[in-house]
Every structure is written in C-alpha cells, then in structure tokens.
Length: 137
Length: 404
Ligand SMILES: Cc1ncc(COP(=O)(O)O)c(C=O)c1O
Image (cartoon, rainbow over all chains, first blue to last red; front, side):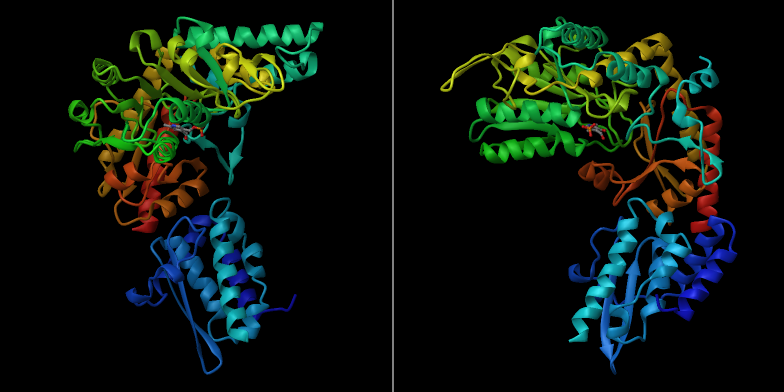
C-alpha cells in the first residue's frame, strides 16, 4: 500500500485524541471549516445513497486536478466528509481512482461509524472512486 | 420489583460498551432474552429436536405436544377463547402479511377501502398499500391531532359500505402513545368492519385481553417480548380464520392431497405451511412464563415511571423537544435536541455506552408529521433502572454541549 503523508497525519492527529468525544469534537471542527456548498448543487445525482444522513458530493476537473465540494446536515458525518475530501482535493483522477483510504481503518473511524453508518462512509469512498474513474478516460 | 436481581437473568446486560456499562434503551427494536428462554432453546435442541405434527415416533410426538402447549400458553396470555385462534408466524410483519394477503385475495374488491392510521409502522402500512393496489382498492387514514395522537372522532366519517378492514397500532413505536382501542373497535364494529391491532409495542408492556377488546385480529413479535427472532403470533377470531384462504402452501396445512386437489386443514394449521418453528414457540412460551412470574402489571408500572422520569428530565433542558403531548406513555419516548442532528446525538450516546435508536423508526409518515427527518428514541424494558435514565439524561447534556 503506497504511503500517503496526508493520511499518516490524520492517523497521528486522531490517535493522539484519547477520548472519542474529543475525536468527535475534532471532526466537528473540520466540518465547520468545510466551505459551504452552493445550494443549487444539492441535487439528487450528487446525493450519496446509503448514508443515514444526507450527504452530497460535487466534483469537477480544474487543470487536470479534482476539486470537490460537499455537504451534510449532521455535524460528525460532515466532519468525516471534510476529512475525506481534504485527502482527495487537488489530486489527479488517476491518483484518486486507485487511492486506498487506509486512515479510516487505522483511526477506527470506519468501525466507529458502523454498523449502519459504515455503509455511509463506504458509500462516500465508493462515490469518490466512481467519479475519479469516470474522469480518467 | 427487585430490578438488580432481574438484571442477572439477562446475560447480554453484563457487558461494557466502549468501556462503559451497557445502558440498553432500544427495547422497542428488540429486547434481550432471559436465561430461561435461552435454556429452553438449548434443551429443545439437545433433548427433543423433532418436527411437530409429522412423524409418529416418541420425540416427534413430544415436540408436537410441546408446540401445542406453547400455543395454549399464548392463548392464555392474550385471553383468547380458543388455542385454535392462535397462529404461529415468524413475527408481527409476517402476521400482518398473512391477513393482508388473505383479504386481498378473498375480501377486498375494486373500490373497496382499508382504514389505517397516520401513526403506523411500515409493517402495518405497506402490506395494506400493496394489497389495496393489487385489488384496485384504496387506503383511508385516521389523521393525527395536535398532540401526536389519533383523531379518532374522524373515524366515523372514514367508514362507509366499502370499508373492509381497520388496521391500527395499539401503541406507537415512536412516541409510546396508546391508542383508544375500545373506541376504535366499537366504531368499526358498528359498521360491521373487522379490526386488526398491531400489538408489537403493547404486548411486552401490558396485559392484553383480546376477548375484552373484541378485536378481530391481534399480532405481535416474539423478539420484542423477550423471546427470539423468527417467532410471532397472529390471533384471529375463529370465524375469520375459518373464512380466510391460506397465506402460503405446502406441507402440514392439508388433510388430503391428490395431484389435482387438496383439502385444507382447519385453522391454525392451515396457516402454518412448512415445518414449524417449534423451538421458537417454546422460547416464546418460556418468555411469557417469565413475564407472568414477574407480573406484567408491575413491569408496566415500573416502565411508565422510567419514562416519566426521562420525560420530566428532558423537559427541563433548554432546546429539547419531546414528541407527543400525553399524560402517560408505553415503552417508547422520542425527542430531539434543537440544533443537533439526531444521528450525531445517537453517535455520541453510543460512545457513552447508551444504546438508543435514531431516525424514522420505520414510521416515516408519522415521524415526518410530528418531528421532521428523524428523532432520538429511548425505549425501556423491564430491566432498565432509574440510574440508567439518569445516565441518559447526563449523556444528552454532554451531546448538547458538544453539538450545539
Ligand atoms: C409497531 C410495530 N409494528 C410492527 C413491527 C414489526 O415487527 P417485526 O419486524 O418483528 O415483524 C414493529 C417493529 O419494529 C413495530 O414497532
């Protein structure tokens, strides 16, 4: 698995926070800093199915790099979304298409959001991959 | 009632979640099982394990007898006139589907109507939508009032010569509101319309007397009443069960079969095609015996006190909404913290060892009408304590501090 310095940073930050409420607070902070999404982009085709909350992801290609916007009504999930988008924003589609989000397991974010929300995070990652693949041509 | 002693009967409760003692307040989704129910399953599979009403050998005879004894136990639990009015199903959903499919095939005609309420669980809503759409019939809905309860006084206007059935829940799985069944049943019967009661959220908390209620059908699930998943009950008045066609077909529901034609068994076996869930019935019997030992009246009173404590605690917190404006609740209570998403609250509570359910609780039309997208639901069982309610209240404060 290729090492990703950004993901390693996330793992170090998250794991330094001992208590899950502290981790949630950190995530909420990330979510608060996620720029608001243009409301007109909150469309059915940008909505991720399989999340307990409504999550939207928009992606476009600017100078060969992927730029993302996202939104979610719930604060903790919004924080997870912000974290994930920060890992992929500005990368090439080819890179994102084969990226492995190992930080989600290593921070136990995946299992903390399970079982019904495991599908949620999984669905976000799957959507990012699908978009990246479609932009690879 | 010595709750601490009763808690010892439930092995699942002896665990910690995220390093904290489990506070299980999701009993409306499913209840935990006392050791006596678990033991009953183990003893059935290790000592008897035979098919009921099939073979004539000793073990099979004994399994058949045990199974029929369990049916009598359910009959007594519901105070039904006869054990032949008790059909074992796989759960409340299955029981409702049985009645819905029989009504669709034999009773509901084009332009007929089925009356349900605006507070139903999807299990007592979708089977009727499907049955009505197949039969070119339609659904009429008893609307909500401003307290979150039903406007039963509008029912008279919903009834007409095309009404074939009224299907309502005894207790809401969202707000714990108890519906006035005597009134609902008497209005329906004054129009000669039968009534199906979804007792999923009532049977675990109060004594049920189908004879006094005079309902035509009553259904509940085993797993919500301290026994296992995969077993449920349909009570149906004899004259209805006698008149209804089978739901599924196969072995055990027929008296004679030729290649062209079969003669149906009488109820309840007519509705139990295939090898029955004998272990399930015996576990249910053990659960009902456990409840009657503890006393359903005492259980109901204890649970009501817990919900009262929770409600008064929540109502003193700024920005907390409790749904349903009623004097007493049964089993469940739903709330939200203003400015916090219900799923966020659920995630924080989970980290604090508290199990609740968040979302629309399979009752989307009701939740949308009273609360919006979702609620946080706490639902109590006989083993919950006042301390656990206080733990929940403290955790709600922490969630609010974090999220708002
Ligand atoms: C009011 C009500 N009806 C029906 C059901 C369906 O029960 P089951 O899923 O056990 O068939 C439930 C369970 O969630 C319920 O709360």
